[in-house]
Amino acid sequence: MMGFYFEVCITPNYFSDIFASEIIDFTKEAIEQINNNSSTTIIIRADISLSKINLLLNRLQDLSNKLSVINNIDVNFTHTIIKKQNKDWVDEYKNSITPIQCCRFYIRPPWGDILESTNISFKNNKTDNIIEIILEPSLAFGSGHHSSTSMCIEALESCKYSENTTLLDVGCGSGILALCANKLGASVYLCDIDELAVNEAKKNFLNNNAIISAIWHGSINTNANNKDKYDIVTANIIASVLIEHSLELIASLKDNGILILSGILDIYEDSVLECFRELKLIDRKYDKEWICLKLQKY
Image (cartoon, rainbow, N blue to C red):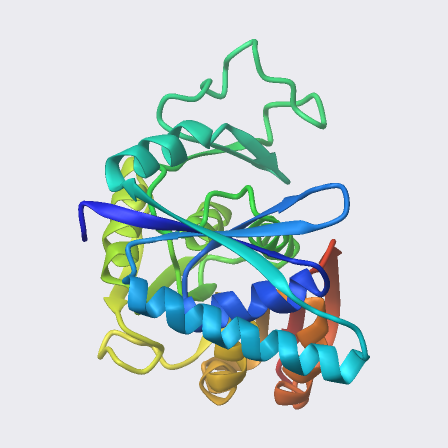
């Protein structure tokens, strides 16, 4: 990792969701979106090179031109590039993470109010059914705050669990989804192509006295510990990656197994569903432009 990173701010005059999807697809980095009165600014913070940023800007210019022609309007964007010290960003990110309740789960950083604190007001006013998850903030995706993650947790809580239930979390990030599933009773298997995410997930499981059946650096079929078939599979990844790995995701399900897909912008819902058409759609959740799909294999 470099000693600095670039903060790139992109503000399109139209179609901010399409721009956001293009940025995620090209950079493979997390983004922040800030809604202003009449526009949305998309922020990328990453230790990528200026040459890659320039390639991104060229790609966005091509996108602007295409959207202008298709929609017969002038589509454009403004941008700023700021070089910052990495330490500043990590500290800023950690300080921004506050405790959150998602369904039965109370997710907090190590310094957040503990479950028994009188400062906490739970949505159902009961603490006996609340499960505490301690999550160390890092640059690995998944804190429970993003709607794509919280919708996944809701979908996981609606699943049935037994002592034999197995779950595979593809693109595990911080491990938050597998952590929740493990607390609900599943034996969990995790993988991620980012080695940082694999290491952070291991730490978070250790901090929560939770058990990982297996975790590996790579995708679904790149480790001998892969059980091949699972009762539940989760993948909170961008639409293009879900589409690319659709056959592997479907093949990893047992008969009657549940597949939970998230990280999908609404403009890509039909494309994703088409690739998973052999599965039955049993539930979908919406939060603004984000979608979570729950499907079943028969």
